[in-house]
Length: 198
Image 1: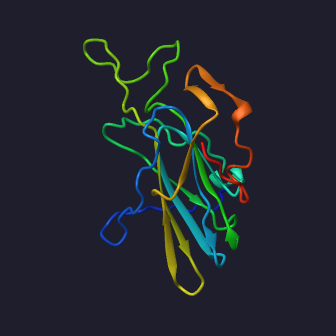
Image 2: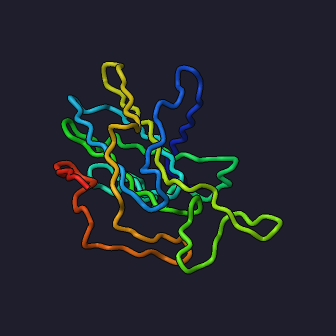
Image 3: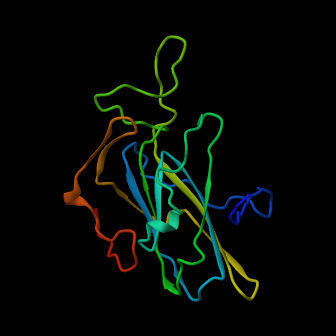
């Protein structure tokens, strides 16, 4: 049977490999961009990012959507009261020495769907009421860099990441979205972008 190579990675949390990042967001329930521009003094031989979101997200590195391996709207639906999934991205061939950019555009998804003028799609309780899984969109990442000399480092989400409102003003997974492209921060996901005060 024809097949291609399959790389399977798992991540086990223990004291040595405990998640080090923290959830970041703007304490709101509207879409947002998160961004960090680490400057690397050398190119890693291997680079694996583990990411998760409360809300769906599109991940990008150095302005290259291929960094997400063809993924859009990660992660899939889950019962957020019980499980929050994560996804791994292999960025080994995308990172360069010098400035690099890690970014994500987070939307409501199934976690904190924006009703707009449409129906809810959160859990329905016995009295036929619907309640969101949560009210704050956020993002999480542990990014592991491995070097030829055996050393390694980890870049994590934290207060040093930049957060800004998205140009998407309404995101409903069933009823599309509304965007104000006049406010789009062109190049936000690529090196060389100049942050401004919002």
